[in-house]
Amino acid sequence: MSREERARGADVGRVSAQGPNLVRVVGALLATALVTLAAAAPAAAGAVHTVVDSDNDPYAGIYLRDGKSMGEFRRILERYMPYGTRVELLCADNGEAVGPYANRRWHSVRVADGAIAGQVGWIADRYLDTPNRANEATPGEPECPSGGTPAPGPGTPPPAGVPARDGASVYFSPPSPDDLSSPATLHRPYEQWRGANCSASKAASVPSWVAPANQNVTVLSGWSIGRLGPIYLLQSTSAGNRSRWQEIDYILLFDPGNLEQLTGNRCDKTYPAARLYTEWLKANASARLVILAGEATSPRRHEGIQQAYFNYLREHGGPRDRVIVCNYGSLKHRSVYTKYRSWITKPAITKSSCPDGALGWNP
Image 1 (cartoon, rainbow, N blue to C red):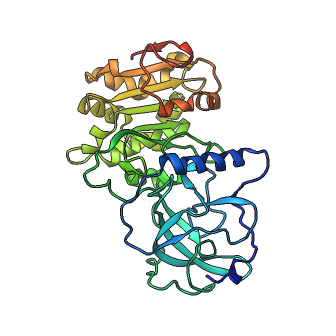
Image 2 (cartoon, rainbow, N blue to C red):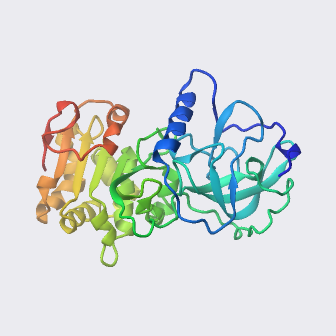
Image 3 (cartoon, rainbow, N blue to C red):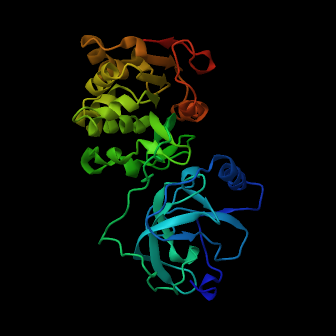
């Protein structure tokens, strides 16, 4: 892209490098992460280009977009690229016009280095050092299939000969306005894991391995309606030898809900959560299910999880000692998540290690 095309323009989803605000802190943390966490990614198959500051203003980077529009972004660490990050071009398509020359070219890319290496998404041509002018094709880059939008998430395999470590985590978020930040390795917004008509197919796209730390995904978590994320993943990987079930060692649910929510919600009724959890616990001797129960889950002696999850577990000889409930009584629904979300990345909770000394029990 020409220097002229990089004249000033608006970018509503970028991180300021100035000002005493949270966004500045995020930029600083990620700059550090690039130094301490970055690992070499596997060789890219497509052309590699660099993310550039085309507006010459005090910003530290840009968010990877979930679609071909500047408004389709999530302000989370998992999608943030400091300027200078390299990306592999996968394909191109026309989208929202960006910048003073109304450049409609967008690139589907895979991040090639840095703290979020392996992430897939969209970036406007204006913010890459491509050689073409505005609205021109980039030499050698294929067009995306009609209507094709790549699923976000790592798409590269683990480096050959380098054993992966366990411990990468996934958080399944409720819909906005409750799509709060998480410390998980992979943050999945509601629309990326819940398919139409309660389809579990999108959950199957959650990778089993993530860069750059070369970690296997072994932890699933969800708050509120996000309780369905782990269920969808178990359902979508339940065929065949269920090898994915051997990889998932820990599921952590934050205040999943009451009896009406767990048994009356259409999507909860679509899949047999109790059977899936019981069979997963039996199939994987390392598996642990932990529920932090606050104001939504605790009423009437935890009637919801008792009927929706535990009755089947007890009736079918499930390993009850590997299911833990931590009691938080009337703690507000949102507070259960915001107060204890850091436990997504901590060692699995046991009956005697519930956060803040809460009472833990087995069903």
